[in-house]
Structures are given as C-alpha cells and as structure tokens.
Length: 332
Image 1: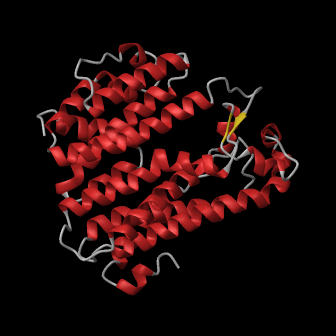
Image 2: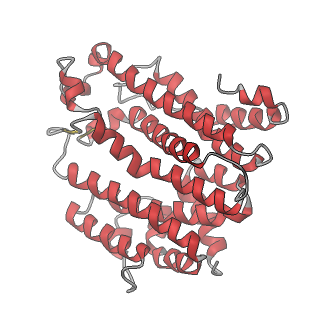
C-alpha cells in the first residue's frame, strides 16, 4: 500500500473506529490493511450520511460521488470540504478531509482485494442511501417506521451482513485458501453474524433513534400490540412493548450464535482470526443480557457493556484458547 497507509490505517483509524480497532489489531498482517481500509471507507460514507446539518439531497449527492469513486466508475477528485466543516468530531473532520488519500490507498490495493472492498462498499452505501431516503422527512414529531421484518432484514444485511461475506472471502483468499471448509456454511453464517451485531445496535439505540424520528421496529408488529412508534417515546409503554422487543433480542442472539458456529468452523490454528470474531460476539451477547433487564425505552439510560467487562472478555478468551472445549463453551 501507499506511504500514507501507516497514518490513515493507524492513528486515524483508531480515532474513528471505537472498539473495532481492538479487533483489527489482532488480525493477521496479511488481511489487516485491507479490512482496515474497507472499514475506513465505510466510516467515511457513514459520516457523510450522518451529517444532519446538511440537507438530505446534498448528503445523497456526496454519497453517490464517493460511491462512484470507490467503485471506479469515476476517477476525478472528490472534495468533501463542506461536509468536513460540519463535523463536531475532529477525527471525523480529518476522515473527510483525507478521503482522497484513502481512495489512493484503494487504488494501490491488489486487484482481487480491491474488488472485494468495492463490492462490500457498494452494498453498504446502498443501505446508507436507502436509510437517508426513507427517513428524509423524519423527526420526533413525525416518526417514520420500517413497514415489515423483511425491510429490517434487508437493512441489516446491507449495512452489516454483507461485511460477513467480505470478511469470509478475504480470509479465505489470504489465510486459509486450501482448508477444507464448507464455504456456503461460512458465507450464510457470516451474513447472520453481521446482521446480529447490527440488530443489537438497533435494539440498544432505539430511544435515541426514535428521538431522531427513526423507528426500526416494523409498524405492523407494533400495530398488532395496539402501539405506534410514537408510543415508544414514553418509558411507561415498555411493559406492553417488552414481549415484541424480546422477540427481536432472541433473533439477534440466534444470529450471534450462528456467528459463533462460524467462528468455531474456522481452522483452530487461526487463533487471531478466531479471537477477532469471538470478541464482538461475546460483547454482543453480554449486551443482550443487559437489554433483557432494563427499561429499553428510557432515553436517560445508555445501555452498554463496560470497558472493564470488555477487557475481562478479551483476557478470558485468550487465556482459555488452549483449552478448546472450555473456549468453545464461552457461548453455551
């Protein structure tokens, strides 16, 4: 990769990637830069989509221009200065300002890897564009809801499930190309892995999303309980909503367990990749446990696994790895 990669895929990636950087650091060097670059570009498109100080049409135009640069259908320079100036986060401002450098790294990436990155970013940006259009007029006074579970499944695939496919294909290509593995099993469960992580985020962030006018709980499922999305703004609605919410928690858990089956199917000698898969699964399952016992409609509660608990999860998973049966039993 280009000379700028240590900076873009080091300090900048760390600043914008939150917990993902811990996962990235443990990955084998043969795939670390490709996955890091794909994440950096996805964070760039996500930052554009989330810049709500600008009109939706302006964000859609910027997303489209960046998508075309990523996919190689256009080659002209892209200027995200207007968007960069709207960022409250210094890291996200730098991310947009240095977008052209990230695109140069993509151009320097090996053809097969570049095509994989392009494919996954094409799907991710389609999900972000869909989200912007769907919620273009949304506000806390006029909440917009998804209509069906199929729409929810489609969205979680576009923004996260497709990452499971990308992760599988790039690992298969560079780390265990000759291992006798069931590729259809890995791809399908890799998709469920990603969808499970995204669904946990959606369920955890429900109060905040509602106050931004977004409801990812399908309107038909709410109507069956005699509820509307606006009812979910009231914490006292939680007991009536709880059974439906728990159904989505169960779905998220089932997806993450499919992710654990995926992880255990990888060659045991691939310790780094298996740990990189295990950590978000274990953190996600712990998040689900917390969500089962809190008022999930209370906007004053930011429900998440503590930093100390995350460190404990990481430490325990490393210590138990030589004890295969006990490690496999981390998800019982």
